[in-house]
Amino acid sequence: MERGGRWLLLASLLTITAQAAHKSDTGGDAAIINHSSMVIQRLQELLQNGNASDSTLRVRTSNSDEVKIIHTHQLMLILQSDVFEGLLGNQSVVTLMEPPECAALFEKFIRYFYCGEISVQLNQAIPLHRLASKYHVSALQKGIGDYMKTHLASESTQGHVVSWYHYALGTGDETLQESCLKFLAWNLSTVMSSSEWVTVSDDLMVSLLQRSDLVLQTELELFASVEEWVNRNNPNISIIEKVLRSIRYPMIPPSQLFQIQKQSVLLASYQHLIQDLLFQAFQFHSASPLHLAKYFDVNCSMFIPRNYLSSSWGSQWIINNPARDDRSLSFQTQLGPSSYDSSKKITWNALFSPRWLPVSLRPVYSESVSSGSQSNRLEDGRPRLVVSSAVSGLDFAGVTFQKTVLVGVRRQQGKVFVKHVYTVHQSTDEVSDFLVHADLQKRTSEYLIDNSLHLHIIIKPIYHSVIKAK
Image (cartoon, rainbow, N blue to C red; front, side, top):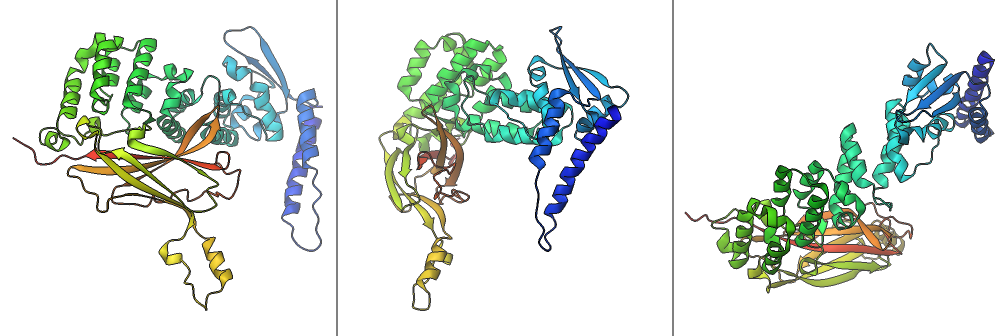
């Protein structure tokens, strides 16, 4: 029976191989007769009914006496896993110890060996990836890794990106780590208001607070969320000092600085750790940045704004039917975060075009160029975005401007997640590679929400040190 079962499985696999060979035959009147779905169905029935089984997996967990019995077929397992090949080489019954979350999905994992397909939910990604990694099922391991990278913005009740980051850190998956870090940084306001905020590890918190590309409403919002995190996690004093000294206090208006000094329970105990930074922040707000730059290094991270969504630093721009025609927007921002500059405004103009051709590709309208040819070349255009100051030759001593454009995707429960961020320097008006791969003609495009393009343009003033005073 054991040998007969193996031959039955081998015959099925050879049938699939033969069908693949038929597909490569393009000569004559060849036709493809495809029964692959029937073969896969029969393979799954073998697993489900235990027919012709020649091996047994006993799956246990360390904290339970329950044993899950799965009757399998060695050929199906060893074809995709060298680990199973080693385990089943000299025995037909194998006992496997798995964590509870992996044991609960083990039968689903084994079913993948028989049909090459598996359904994955957000809370199943880590245990399934653990199983694929442990048993060297490389195709499934890669598939679940790709799933995680493309489902960072998916809605979940408890949140999942923080746990995915910690898992990627433990497994050394640097690509997934970076994907998670970007998502957390670009959607920090949403993450801070979720239940997963308190699950952020000490190292991840320190790493996030060092970034200038954090997207949030204001620096005060960040301080309040960090205070909540400290109160809930009670880290050691060295971590508390690191996170408190990573808050960019000069980006908080003086009135709010006074308020947190008076009302913050955290600062009541640890204000001595940042007294120098608070004093420096008040100095920053009381003098001209140009004058301050003579005495302090204003080019350090403390004086660099993050990506603030406050109306003082940019504007939201929702473009309905973005494939239709050109659009424009005008908005104002503060000259700088210092209270000294709060009353000084700069006007910015933005121009969006769904199919804007660069000069080198624009058609020459003459009798020698047919209208059909002109139309075809216009279709070669791609979305373009230009952001420029209303005053030509904008130049403020000691200050340059960085333009950042956020592209929101996948609204869930009223929230828009940021998936793409484009940054250009003051000297450049056009946002390079803007939505270069987007097809705004499709209503199902990942870049569109209800057939609208959700943008947020942020202007970040960057101070530069000038002549140092002795």
